[in-house]
Image (cartoon, rainbow, N blue to C red; front, top):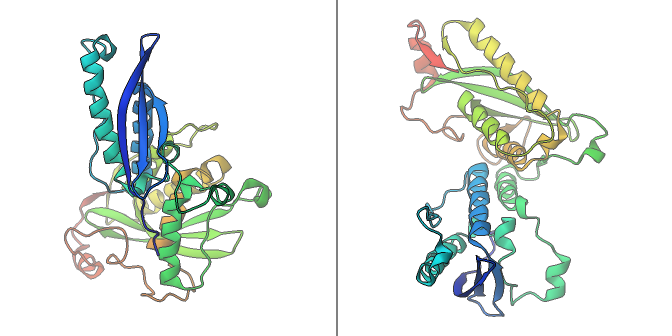
Length: 320
């Protein structure tokens, strides 16, 4: 069950100009009571925070209303005019109130540090129970999975010290179907630590999107190349077999790097693959087959495998 979401209000009552730099005093109020939290931020710091929010939304595919950050002025600096500074205060105040109206963002570190303490929880208790910011979305996926699969094991990446140089996840591409002019691959993943295995489906575009997200974060290792996009004939089994081999090799290579395995992006990937897929030998409360209806891939045409079998004699090219 989800906890009740706190509601916050932001005011920027004043500012200071120090060494020609504007520092905005931001007061964040918990509408349930308690003392407000006051912080000072420059425009550039808030702009950097906005970029992290955009990355968070992209990584976890959070659906919230579009929130625009106040644009930077190019013809003249805001700090050259008191009137401009006051106007910018109002813009930033509106922006921050829109951000805090989205509870999905509260666990992001740059947001969490702005929030006042919960008046219903004592200071000592809050200190004893620190929030692991990046795991809120993962925890929600875990709860959804366990509600569907009862007492099954929910696999998450383990720390390197526990792995003892053993690769935790092994991927194997099995069959595929043609869906909306794309190849939809069935992938089996095995957690070598828990011995749990499950299957899920992914398109080439889905895996490429995760690769692009990995490229956007700082890694201390060179990221393996992602297979190039190409067109293949659906009647040519050799082409699809080669593509599956390339994608399988790619996943097994990147999951050989512990830095990548522990990244928010891949932790989310592993968690969501379990929610969207089905455990091998699981005691699911729901359906026991992975279908297009209960997967994360939404059909635009209600094309079925049977329809594909009827049409396979007409060669056409697809993206894979």
